[in-house]
Image (spheres, rainbow, N blue to C red):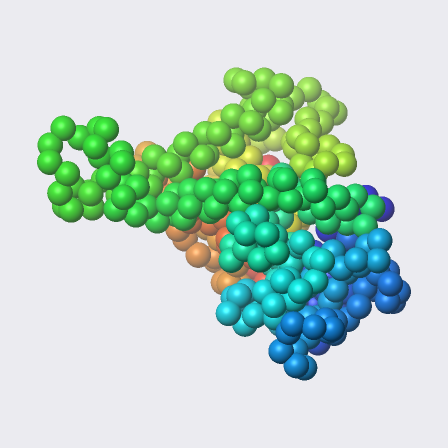
Length: 392
């Protein structure tokens, strides 16, 4: 089993069991110990490698313990403090990490609730744990670029000098990315002012900033969408052709994990209706939905069926599992229909551009797929959401 397989296995376990885990101890047993064992590769039953309820001999408050200490070469290397799944990771409630960091040989400290992990070192002052993590990841929404950095913490690859040397760069890169993500979602006055001063010749008043804010939001989302679509088209090997133009029987791929490529474009088995024309905009929307859904399922399981009325995107080519419907052919009105709340006819969400799928439907697309993957054959009343006689 590869390192990425181990991460995927824990993520699936969290998805399947998260709702039934209600205590910190249950979180440790269900998610954190398996992460230490299956992902990082340490023997949780070997006290020379992993010590639960670790107590240092000197220098800390009496009776205070750290949930886990990981040893390598006879020295404490990693300290782990645990919270209940779903609890916020606030260092105010993990003061023992600071104390133990100062009196042990550990250079790495981890605060986790089993799903989210905050990893710290002593980059600011020697033997004093930083107040900000250099590595932050969520097992249910893993950033693939961080996988090699997480792997450096494993028993097989552990190299404290390599981890620490990369920590400062990772801390600032991660911080910058989080700032950008927050600004893209809801631009601050400072962010909007940055663009206003470069584009608007008049005086930058609060009224002007408020007028520019939705324009900045839209422009940023369009840019992100353009970048994603450009990469998808590059993966297809053709900057101008659509997925429908791929040769019969061929399968284009993009590299989604460090281990293997995954299919991008499905083979369409159905005979197309000559009166149904699949537009480039609809295919762009399909690629966007598939790019969003790839965090939950293999992308080849997400397919489309075009009809005269709408463009349906389904899980497993099953009309009982509608993910989203796209209505993009109107001259002035475009909208999508999502199905995450079990509504018979879905929920309509108006958009101005296909790129708006990222902002109005990304979380709902993931939520819908997760509900289907949780064992539900389909939402109540969803059997007719994609009428068989309308799809090609």
